[in-house]
Amino acid sequence: MVFANQFIDTDFHPIDIAENLASHHAWDFDRITENEIALIVEGQWRTYSITLAWSGNDEVLSVICSFDLAPPDTKLPSLFDLVNKINDQCWIGSFSFWDDQKLMAYRYGLLLAGNQIASSEQIENMIDIAVWSSERYYPALQLLIWGNTTPSQAIQVAIAKAYGHA
Image (cartoon, rainbow, N blue to C red):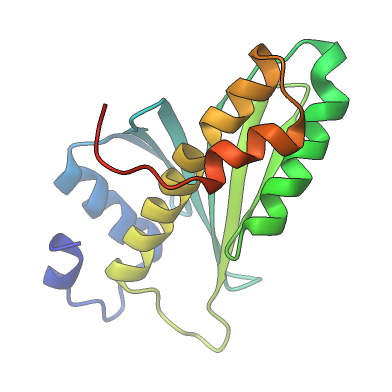
């Protein structure tokens, strides 16, 4: 977050700020439109596709962090149960499974009503929280899909605190 404090945020478009953050962190990115940017961010478990989009009409900056997840059809009811349990624990944002694309997606929108301006720190926090949330629940999703566990057992992996590194 050191970089976030170096911006003077006055009159910066939120996607311009996101592009500067991506450059600073050496993340691969593609400025799709004036109001949308796609980033690739490396996590511990996965490489995440992150999209930030600005809607001037709604005054919302949204982030979507997605990753491939291809569960067998027989696991879908359990997966949906686990996603509900995960969302019960999320204070910011929520997860959805997009079956057609075989993607798990974390979504969050920052409301900036009244012509508020998103700071670089807020945008960096949005990206950090999206990756952190995905990293936190990824092992539980994998355990449910490829292990012989119930949603209640799988969620315990995300609840448990890890101490140290393996």
